[in-house]
Length: 407
Ligand SMILES: [Mg+2]
Image (cartoon, rainbow, N blue to C red):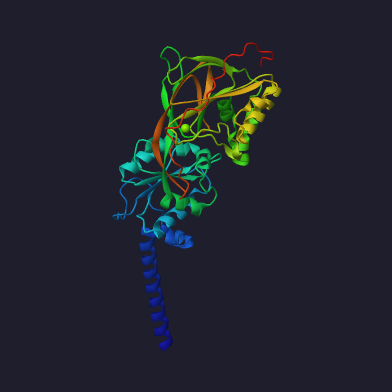
């Protein structure tokens, strides 16, 4: 009889403590899902916090409200979300907002919604496309932007010396980093003749271009990019080596147009590419200027090889690459300015930060100095150099007198 009563008491106690545990765990999970172990979250069906807009759940004075804008197609985003929520919670920051980008809106609208919801810092989680889209909104705000790079090239993140691959260090940078003001470039794309086709404005943070480089970007296979990373661009480049050069008219800061044949025209806010390749070595995002380079290679493989040598020499710090242009089949001409107009004889593919924008017949590009505030690692903020002298500029690729080996 006693055993029977004790048994009932034990069952009642067990049930009561289990339901108490469930209630408490649910209560904790509703405020900080990451604090509950994954298995328990699954059993108790605790959902991650709603990603939609709205106000912050626990606003506290003096604590920054963080909004993350993530590209859900990148692998590892869910794990990162947990780490990000945890990083905020251990710093006693308010529960952050979490937005996902969509195919229709890669981050611009979400960033606007985050600012409207009162975010103090907006963090782009994704590749250069997400960073660009979020920056497009942040460039017009005085709020800082953070970057958690998860793309193929992560061009902009590399140029900021973000600790790529170290999630904890990246989160520390985003939440506690120093602030650095950076120039942004804008490019108006003219699609058609006689008023046909819309003009559009696109932001770029690294390099925009027309011609060969844009063909390369557009031709890089998505599957190959997933497997090989930025090497995929080299394979795409090889397919376009034999194409005709383009004829273009280039005008810098409202000056006279200079006509030339070239492979590509690049406009750089900053110039470091993956693998340490410096396409435009002098470009910095702290000088209120855009560096433009017209790049030409003639004579088939010979010209391309010489050009490759020139790019490598530039990357190694050689300023005057005329020395190694033995065969004169390639040339890179640099000029710096704040505003550029480029007209192209034939419609050419254009790209911004590695994203293809399709074909255009004209480009107007300009710099917006110090428009973007970025969270960067402590101790990595350089002085701004807006007042620096113009470098010794060469004219953009004037037509050579004779063309012994036309491509
Ligand atoms: Mg610059």
